[in-house]
Length: 355
Ligand code: NAD
Ligand code: ZN
Figure (cartoon, protein in one colour):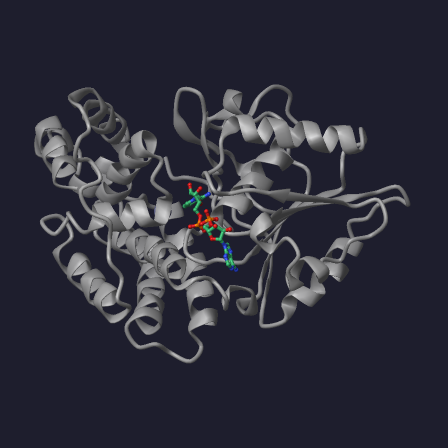
């Protein structure tokens, strides 16, 4: 069975297009007592971007903190905050920030129309009702969260996305001007998330012409950004993120993401840096990709943290390996159906011990 793949239906791309947000939302303000909720990464509190939000009377500004990557308990708390602000359901949720803020806005828009806790919906196609209309405005590029059908959440028992066609944004607004001030290391780590999506998709056994078309373009854009320092690098990275997301949407990520999930579950390592840490140990699996990644690191003077797992006891390492090996589709994409013979628990533990 081939997947019937839903995509984001409306997209604005261009420098300064953030100014069009007002017009986009205007069309969705159904009645005089309509209101919108602006989910804003709190890094922008008191900054120019906050002043530029097209807030109307009655709209809610909901700053969110992303020091920790999104947790289901935090989503439940934010949903309660929106309900307490106005018992009427908002007409739109606008997520402004990196992958974390965009995922939070997705989850809030879903949970406003679906009863219970965000944790109840971690999995595949568990959401029953369409989300509130939701819009993404990325301020950091690489994750592809702007176009994916998941919102990655850490719950009480698992780190797993709410995967659903309803999760997808209704509208995205891609303004390359918004990513120009991202701190260098963060820019690199999140950008490498995209580069790694491309390598894992292009080197995977699930590859098909659809994914290849997007993945090849995305990796070419990454090279222009991270090796050639192209003058239009912000525009290019924003499109690379989108194309990388489209590539994995119809294939899958691979070994690096599987290992990074284990690291993140046990140590709370953030996604972009976690992928960089694990990728650097996967020379045997992705020789060309790792070589080029190291060139990119050298060009930008990036140092990765080392010895993260030093001092971890066997139980913690075991949990890491169990989380990683639990992601069967990722391993199957990487090594094929017989992946369990290739990536044994001992080999995973060996890799983690080196990190
Ligand atoms: P992030 O959203 O966690 O942000 C990282 C840091 O950058 C934060 O401190 C944030 O405040 C700051 N930041 C964001 N924009 C900025 C700007 N313009 N200027 C200055 N600082 C800025 O980082 P990320 O790498 O974009 O996202 C990681 C998250 O995305 C993780 O939670 C991960 O699980 C999730 N993710 C989701 C998907 C998906 O498909 N839904 C895919 C990959 C990763
Ligand atoms: Zn990723």
